[in-house]
Image 1 (spheres, rainbow, N blue to C red):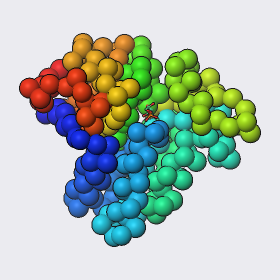
Image 2 (tube, helix red, strand yellow):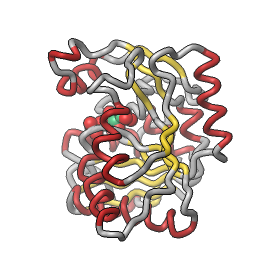
Image 3 (spheres, rainbow, N blue to C red):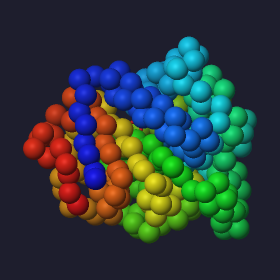
Length: 249
Ligand code: F6R
């Protein structure tokens, strides 16, 4: 069943994601999870970290699978998604298992080995996703095939602009290419949780949920998944009709 849940505030969305993690961990202390980066996730990770610090969540067994990364960056690049996730989630929550993308040298064998690594862990239990202003999920920009696998992609102009703020002078420029799990890869997760907050996501979220299921709006493709759920705050969900709470593809 695909469900949309609208909350009053981003803080309540964060609480709901943390609750969901708690349920997952109660059933399986070693879940395999993908976590996105980005501003939507900051209050979510703050809540998760706070629950891990006061003992309500024990995340030490979580196996994290990286979702996306800039191409060509190494571990030392401060604006890399790896560094961001370490800072905001992994290190403060005591998570040590992190299966990373071969972003520095994304050759076809390295990308295939990355996907083998997901399978070797039994597949992804929960894929947490954000949504870009153009409807992208991970770095799957509009037009990405529904059956795409982990690969190198060119970044859309809007996506590069949205990410400029993370690149300081020292890092020089926003890369033009990225490595991302494909849509087909993401859809193999056993369950999907897409998070959207803020008024600037309202139109694209509405399109993803109520427009056609199409590769032009990659987030719409999660509607073909049997266990996808959308959590939004009132601002992002302002076009959502409660009658649509159980959305159908
Ligand atoms: C990043 C990722 C992206 C973001 C999306 C929203 O790892 O997967 O798809 O989720 O660009 O970013 P924010 O939250 O910054 O609006």
